Image (cartoon, rainbow, N blue to C red; front, side, top):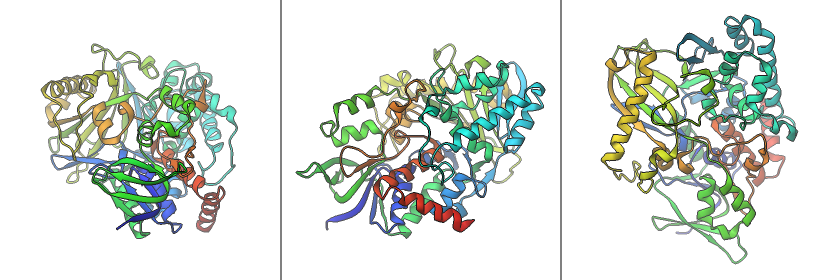
Length: 509
C-alpha cells in the first residue's frame, strides 16, 4: 500500500524529532525514518555491565521553570516526564589545571557565578560582572533564544571573537582560562570561535544545569511517544538509499534499503549536510553552494572512555571536571602528537542507584583527530551492522584508553584500583552511530572572521527540501531545538511558529 505523508523526516536526531513533532502538533501527517537500531542521534545511550552510558548528552542547561529549554520542552509536552537531577549550584563545572590544586567553579545563577569566582579572584568582581552581563546581552540578541523576541539580530554580533572578548574582560591569564574552560562544550578554536557560540552555549548552563538521571535517550523516547500521540509514523532500521524526483525537479518520494518507498509533499533532512548532498545528488544544487559546504572545516572529533567501577569504592561528585595540563591549552588543540596526548579531558560520573554516595561509572572525553583512525576508515560498525575493525584497531583503542586513564590517575590516584571494566569509543564510533563527517563533535567550525559562511539556511533550492540539525546552525540540545523551530517556521507561514510560542508563553504566564 502506498504510504503518503505531508512531511517526511530523514534521520531521528533531536532536530528531526523536534521538527516532526512541531509539525505533527499542527495536524500534519508526519513520518520519521531512522537507519540505526536506536533513535535520537547524539541522544543515544548504550549499556555495558548492566549500566547505562550517554554518547553525547551528559548534562543540560536552561531547564529550571520558566527558562528557555524548559519552555521549549514544555511546548513539546515532554518536560514533566524528564528524570533530572540538578548539579551542584556552587560549581556544576570545575575547571582544573595540572599542578594547581584549586578547583575553579562555574556556578549556577548569574550572581552566584560572579560570587564563587570572586572568592578566588577578589580583584576581578567588576570584570566578572561585565562578563556575565555581556553574555546575557549576546543571547538576548538572538530570536527564539527566549522563545519570543526580536525577529532579527544585528549581524555585527557574529564578528566578535570569543577568545578576544574574554581577553578584553580581564588581563588575568588564569581567569581567562577559567572563563574559557568549558569550551569542550563547543570545541572552541583559538582566534576563530565567535562570541555568540560561547555565549549561547554557556549561558543556559549558568542559568541552571541538570543531569538526565536515566540517560539522554529518555528525551528521544518521550519525543517519539508524543509523535505517536499525534499520529506520526516513526521507523528505525529504515535507511534511505534514493531520493526520487518528478519532472519539475521536486522530490516526490524516498526509497529505502529494505525496498520500501515513502511519498510526501515536504522532506526534511536531519542527516549530515554532506551526506544530504550525496544522497539528493549534487546536480540539484548550485556549484557555489556545494563548494561552500565542502570547504567547511569539521569540528574536531573525540575519544571517550567509559569506566565501570567496583561498587562503593569511588565517591560520587555532582559536577563535571574540565581538566587541562596547562592554562594555555584551553584554546590550543593543535598539538595532538602521541607523546603529548591527551592534553585535556572532560570527566563526569554517575551515582550508584544502590548507594548514591558512590559512583557506579565514570565517563572521560578528550579530543582526537580523525587522522588517528584514518587507516580503519573503510570499516563500519554499529549495533545494527556488527563488523569487527580488527585486532590492530582494538589495540589502538586499548593504548589510548591507557594513556587517558594515566592522566586521570594524576588527579585521582586511586582510580585504577577501582575500575571493573573499560569501554571506549573513537571518531569512527561517532561517525558510524551519529553520522557526523569524520566523527565531528559539533558540525563545522564557525569563524568570527567569516561567520555567514557556516550559517546554513534550512530552506534549500529544491522547493520541498528543508534542513535541520547541528550542521545547519547551532549545536547542542538547545541550539538544535531552536534550529528545528526555525526549520518549521520556513515550512509554515513565517510568523506562525512565533505566534504559537507567543500564545504558549502568555498562556502559561
